[in-house]
Each structure stands twice: as structure tokens, then as C-alpha cells.
Length: 462
Image (tube, rainbow, N blue to C red):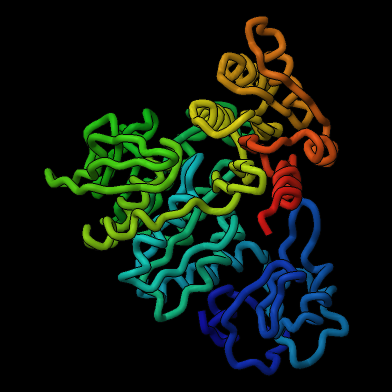
């Protein structure tokens, strides 16, 4: 983005109250704490706070212009700061993103699904960037505000944009798809995420699949053909990937390699390509398939893809493996959690020969709706018979996991429960022993990452 104030105002259908002194704007912010010199600050009204309260803070940090829907906040704003008044700042942000999108020559890729969005995006970026200049969304900028903020960063030299799309309320995927107008729309899977807001897996699937009916006619829909909810996608232009069902891109002869990783053959149009993938977990094999699907639809050649796959790494807090002092192995999956993902990663962890004790530290799984306690109890029942030594649970809901394990007489797993992560931090400081293998996972709000960071600090190699 490199836009004049007039272009911005015309895109938003606003009213310029003050022109300011800047000729061009190249970045947008909605958080006054992250506003940089020359940014355009958009004052968003949210459920918790109102960005109009932080206009002065954004200006103090160097904002060169502000977008507002409430003119009562403009008293005392310096003359050099531009001001645009709009009826709705969220809608204005979307209008600006749409304008930037329409004026970009890059290919846009939007990735949605219940799990694997960020890992797929990161894998795809590595596969594609050797041949094309890539813009990718940063962190968790994938919401109604996050995706537009990511999109607006596109510059004329970018050839492809990799964007995530998340949702927790009905209609959000359609809205984001209409803003981004992707050339490639990818759906990873459907799982028990945001049940609190949607009620059923079918409703979640319907929301994710709304991407299909809102992409442009020229778009290609890429999807996981092993997912029962996605298998029936009917789109004029579609590309499927899978392992168990015939797909456009498949994996054959998959073998697990020690200590981590896989080797096998990628298959497309009757041709086979040997690969080595240095990452643990079958869920990540599907993320690899999704990323390769993006690369192939972005016209990346097989030679480049196969040379690059061995360089792929897991993003931070999504299963990265650290070897610490005293032979301690730490697997950090503290970014988020849901029933399917938590069970799959614990099952994988339980099968590995990793050290003296296998310790799982898990936090509450949130946004599961009325059956949230049942989901936690069922998880406890499923892992009670696994070859684990210790399960440490954090949060009110996770007490159900502990209770279920303790109710299985033949289970030898020791269990501990804490209400808060801070309490667990104190406990593990003296509980962890040399040679332990520790897996950590939980919903972000439970802050299981605090426990992970404490262990890393206590047993750092440096």
C-alpha cells in the first residue's frame, strides 16, 4: 500500500475533516500501542474498548492520520494530522482493503479451516518464496480486522499474498472472502472449534464452506479430500489433496523416520516424487499436502518444492521441539487447543521413545459450548490407557480430564491439577527431572505458555 489521502478517502466514502501534511500512507494500525511514525490509525469500536479513546496515544506515537466515526475525539489534534470521518470504521477498513486488493496484481491465497491454518501458511511461504516475492499474514492477523490489516501491507513488488481467515461467528468467512477475492481458497479441515458459537460440526462446516460460494469465478478451491465435510465440495475449479481418498495430490508409501519426520512419494497426475519431511505428526503431513497444493497452484515447479520440503520448520508454539539442559525434551503446542488436536498430539507423544518420564501439561479447551465438560472427560478416558507417566491439568474444565483418568483403576498415570498456570509454574520448577519429555498444549487464554517459558528458562542451554 502506498496511497494518498484522497485515494483512502474515496475508498472509504468518508469526509476529510483535515488534510494533514503527509503525501502518502503505507501502513495502517488499529492498536495505538503498535502505531508507528506516519501510520494511518483506524479507531475501531470493539466489545471491550473503543479506539477513539486512544487517538491521542496513536498521535503521540507518530500517527500521520486518523480514521474516526466519532468526531468528539478530535479536539486538540495537531493540524499536521489528517482526519477522515466515516460512518463505521470497521466497514471503512474493509473498503480500504478491498480497494488495495483491486489495485494489486498479486495472486491472493486465503487459507481457512479448523486447524493448521498458520502452519500451512508458513510452509507454503517457504515453498513459494524461492520463486516469487511473498507477502504473508503475520501472527494471528486473520480476523475481521486482522485479514484487512495484512492485506493492506501488499506492495507493488509482491507477486503472491498468503492470508489466513479465521472466524468465531456466522458470516465472517463470507465477509472476509469478499474483501480478499482470492485466486486460491484453501480449506484445511473441519473440527470441534468454536462450538460455543456454532453448536454443531455441521454449522462450522457450513461457515467454512461459505468461502466456496463467495470466491470469484476465476478462483480455485483447494481442499482436504480426506475430510468428510469437504469431500463433497462442488466447484468448477477445484484441486484436492489427501492420503486415503483419490485426490489431485496424494502421498504414497509414507514411512515415519526416527527421531522425527516422514519420507514417501508425492503423487500428481500419475507422476511420483520422493520427499523427506523433517516434522512430527500426521496432522503436519496434511499441512504439508495443503502447502504443496498451494505451491503447485501457484506454478511452483516440483524440483523447487522437493528441494525445499526438508527445510520446513514448525512455527513457534505449534509443536516446535526443544532439547534443553539435562536431556529434557520440550514440545511446545501452547498456541491453542481443541479435542481432536489435543488427543492426536498426546497420542503421537505417547508413542515416542523420548526419555525417562513422559509428562503432559494441558490446559482447558475453550469455546466448546454446552458440552465443554464432556469433551474434557472424554479426553481423560481416551488418554488414561496411554503410556504416559504424568498428566498435569490447568484450569477449571481440565479437572474433568484428571477425574476421568483417576476413575480408570488400571491407569498408572499420576495426575495433578491447578487452577492457574502461575500455580503450575511454581510446581514444575521442582518437579521436572533430568531426561523428562514434556508436551504442553492448551487454549491461549489459559496461558500454558507461561509454564513452557519457565521450563525453558530453568533448563536453558545458555
